Length: 461
Image (spheres, rainbow, N blue to C red):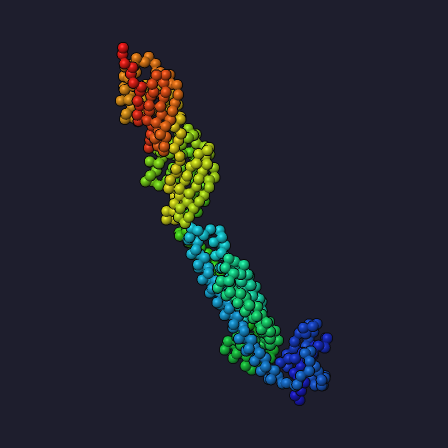
């Protein structure tokens, strides 16, 4: 004799909580006490009530049809959220590509640039994984996208362009994501209540054929197995896709940093300063271009000697100014300002010029006074260029003989005039007459004489 089931309801054997069920031959676990829930026989209770209130009697087929309709409507929302994930994955993949390419620019700091690449890559990966596994964990992943969208919208809104297109789009996106939580939550409850129907939507044709002729319990077990298999497959696919994306983003970032991004200016400057402080001028000038290195080295050797002698002072940190492919640094060294000019040559920063002010003339004048007071014509002649030295020595000796100087007259005072850039006039005031000298800055950065005019001879009586 066939049993009559009242309103397709079931009751917990332990706490007697009443449920509405679809499969009359199955037993369920009670949500309240974890007891066994069985279908209610007419002989047990003619007026068994569901926990959600009174209702008209419905058979299992009608309830199944209603559940299918509810699941179908929920799929529309899940499909919309899935497309949100897909669009998000695409958008952040494009953002990652632009962030990677931006690292090739000199005005993009490397550290923050790499951080942006990492953030956009992470968002792309989360969106990609969410688009694949959301059918198996709809509410959790919808909540993830809602939180991410809110964070992104907040960043745009508090950023420098709060009324821009990006801020508006991110705010709309966040609102849609939070709005999708309600139907997604309902969908998650439908899945929990009608798991077999939900799984049937995703079962393959082979799985559907294998269910024919089997008992309700066997069908349930096979559907659960198929669902678990599909979930594992989705996670494997999403994990593989995420790993591939991370690999591509990492390789692209490395390629840009090593082959397209110019060398970091701060590293080049630090290397130059270390060479100066550890080895002096010789290793420092090696940073200059080869075409001007020899000429610059000779000039710098003279200028630095004129300022500081043979021992160079330590190079302190300077004040940096720069634009896209040029940089200038002012170093304050023992009261002297040295200017270093850098330029971007392809992918590397190179030192273009070291510019020091004209060394003081006074030490060279002191050499002249010392030689004059010592009566040393050869020491005076040594202050001239090498090619004119012998001629000037002969002229000084002849002039001293003609003036009957047993020693050179005492210098009473020294006057410097016409001192501009690389030339100067120095006059030595004697007791009787004046010695006028002309000076110029040589190509090696040292001062040298190129003219000497002795006082006129006194006429014989």
